[in-house]
Length: 334
Ligand code: AHG
Ligand code: MN
Ligand code: MN
Image (tube, rainbow, N blue to C red):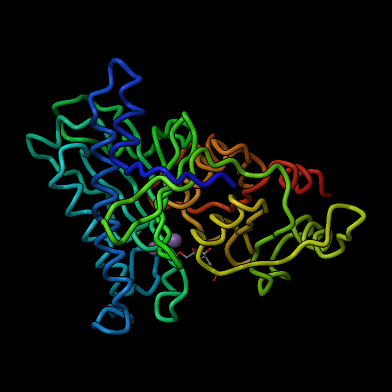
């Protein structure tokens, strides 16, 4: 892994990258800065968890019938607040909001981009001090500039994303984002309060030894998936193994590790839930974009995630994502 020791902040990096485009207005750099700002606020709160009254359930369910945690709401409010008052975003969609929120004010209506968020991923890990994250997806609007954004702006194929990224609140806090120019990671330097380039040009190793899946659901998966998991378990040093199983239960942490080290992450459909659990627009699309830009692959088992035409904001999809050769091995499994 390449580690950059020269200090370059997120702002400097994105502005420098945008300079190469003559038509760039700096709006995308502004948007990424705003996301970084909200992430720093969430970082501060996550670090105080246990000391202030932020752990536990908010006592409500979200539109998908899942328990909402106080930190889910806090994170949602931070991203919503920063983007509403920034100048680069015309509206947002979020796991924690039933419908998309179109900002519809004079400045926002002129903004080129819309964003989709999983404000806090890995909610079930919040109360037990395990890594959690934020996931984001950015699209250029297809609706007319100067008017309010529309739902159509959010329901674009993942391949149309302009940028996508995640923040991991782990042993350190990192922001990783991808554009068609590549994937770069920034670690929060707490002494200066800046995300600083630490992982330039991230590429996912073509192969790895890690497979990540919820084994508890094994008998709920279809035969092909069961066979692939068994193949992983049977690997020896003579055929690229042995493999190791790692599953944190925070997708951000699981996919981040596999992106850096090489590996495969799977959340298949189950007998009860044929579309699995993960949401296309703010969990699978952004990671599929990041993984492809890093040289890996992402599918729903039959097609490329980035080619799925979304029909609703909260739709779910099975997800298989990771190192190219491991994904090919999965696809070739009968
Ligand atoms: P969220 O906290 O945003 O609802 O997402 C949790 C997701 C994902 O991060 C993780 O990979 C998956 O749920 C774990 O689900 P299981 O416990 O069913 O394996
Ligand atoms: Mn999530
Ligand atoms: Mn979430």
